[in-house]
Image 1: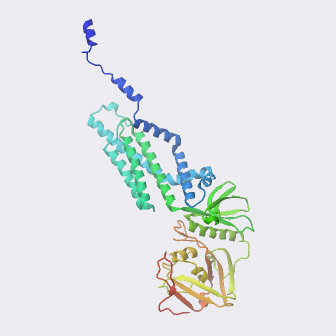
Image 2: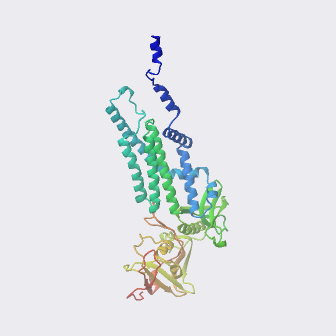
Image 3: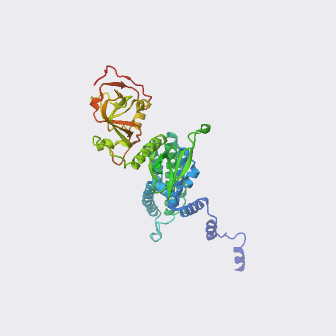
Length: 462
């Protein structure tokens, strides 16, 4: 018996296996997939959703300022604490809801896959749990593959991103999906590990998409400030407002050919300081908006001056911004007036005009529509210029001032495209007294350099 006992331990004895030791060894040496899951969980727990929004919001602000020439580091550093969070929330809130919906859909498909697996393997029902570790299967895999397709279609059809920006965003979506599938195939993960990675991937996609949108838009907000009764005011680009301080950017100067460089200026706010902030728009539109807002602030400051005469209706007064000058006689040098009309429009004389010099300064019809606030809801086309000359000393009641901004749609929210205005405007109380008019036509497209010529067959008319 002893020999047999010894023989058992000899070279001919069967080798013993030690599965628990191997399992323990594998647990002690986790693979890269387990390491990735633990790292992702640590990052998610450390940053959190609010932290992610702050990071994305700060990146969006930094990109916006950098793209328009404002010192980005200094501009971001003066932002109040809540600004980055609000900006990030505005950017990601829709994607957070989408991410939650995706997690809910994956919960359903993953559960269906797990049930199918149990039925196939005829597993013990007492050990079946939703959180049981298992790799992803067909239904969950299909759901993950559909997600980047939806994101790419949204970028292509729902945004103004360029082709190559969409291609780059598509590459990010594919890479994130591959990472989710790679981690999801790990047999040691449970559903919530996959859900966490998918949720973070959607938020990362949102951050990259918004970065590309902001980078290509190059949008900024206009700001106008009036500091005292004698102050001429200041217009620029909005940077931040924190407590009793306002930060705005203005051109640094034209030295060394750097006229577009911006410098950040701090203004202390007080009871005598009033300021307005405009919507996000292109730099050129923001410049016009700033001028219009400055004129409006100045008008509010001077609102205590004498009221306008009764022959200027309230709805006509509302089309002006800033100071309105009522007059009842043309100046000694006369008036050269112009207005825009349609070819098919029978009544070419109207109440609203601008000066010939203002009209000639507009290179395109688009420029004229922006400067004079002429949305298509007033009339569809503007391919005719109507010209009238008023001799000096002519008895004529009219109001002179600057054009107020107009909305593309009806003047209610949402506004749609905002025509900033700011150009010189005349409202003539009795346009029939203007006398003869001449017509000039153009065949140029709205955004092409306008070439105006006398309309064929048109004769001066009363």
